[in-house]
Amino acid sequence: MNPLAARFTGFFGLTGLLGRLGRARSGDSEVLPVRLGQSRRSATGTAPTRAQGFDQPLVWVTVGLLLWGLVMVYSASIAMPENPRFAKYTHSYFLVRHALWLCVAVVGALLAYQVPVNVWEKIARPLFLASLVLLVLVLIPHVGKVVYGARRWISLGPLSFQPSELAKFTVLLYASDYMVRKMDDKERFFRAVWPMGAATAIVGVLLLAEPDMGAFMVIAVIAMGILFLGGVNARMFFLIAFVLVGAFAAMIAASPWRRERIFAYLDPWSETNALAKGYQLTHSLIAIGRGEIWGVGLGGSVEKLNWLPEAHTDFLLAVIGEEFGLVGVVLVIGLFFWLVRRMMHIGRQAIALERVFAGLVAQGVAVWMGFQAFINMGVNLGALPTKGLTLPLMSYGGSAILVNLAAIAVVLRIDQESRQLMQGGRV
Image (cartoon, rainbow, N blue to C red; front, top):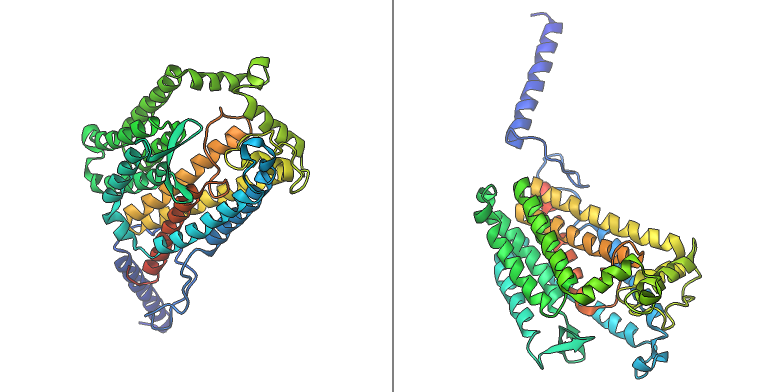
């Protein structure tokens, strides 16, 4: 054999050997749709030289939303003591309480981050049952705290806890664990979907007894999202969606005050609605209209001066729109869009690494945050009927902040474990 032929034979032989090695390492499967992190292996390929332990951009975006929310809660609530209903409060009352809850939430998130994902999978069902017990306790007189006619809180000394917020997280864990356990029954309606539907219905009955239809809507969407992402048959999915839409429509039709909200949304400026069920919506639109492009400046809102009810909770975005204008509203929307997109990507990475439970949890948190933010923004902008849902991570509400941060900490843990696996380590 001449030298040139020998070179070509050696080259193609080496190429074939590398190809066989690559197929052996990948198990003759498709290339995983994930990035292998930002670390490089040493010359021996035994250990990474540098590993990033957590998703820093996700952490900083979350911190940014929390801090911005803290500032806006203070701005939106600073004038509330001028109202006789809140005369006993100081101007910094809600700021201090929100800051205390943030500290508690950060500690809770750090603790949640320390828990391995396989432990969350093992305790998913006990946590779900515990949340059901809390939802029952909140309905017991002298145990549940009544605010504005709704019994949704349990007093914990100077603070109050809302079990429905915990139920969102536990239903998410339970649904993810359920889909992993029922992977082989995804094509059978009664074996795959009916038990999960029954569990969601039990939660819904307890929430509607408070009443808290907004939380039930979020939980139903979380469960539906997990079923869809888990690969439930499309016909089953659309059948369930049709049943849920019909159920919510029946609830609205059967409730006079819910019907009034819908009619007020359709014509909020009428003489009948402007000072009744459409009052919050009209003043939210006035606030956002006053902000125009650049806003009136931080602290310059007029609508928060006892015109816009619940400005520090459900209608915080309206105050942001008035003080920061269209630019501020678009920035908030952009940050939440990035947050949801990033968590969906973390979930996709985990599923690609055959960590189905972890992937469904991460994507379920994304569905939860995205849907609740979408509803809150739609209500503030007049695109959806008024519904009592807060803006995640930003609005005043201690138990919501605590559970939201714990959920994001679990997503960060999922990402950290995925990075560890992709760098050749073990979970």
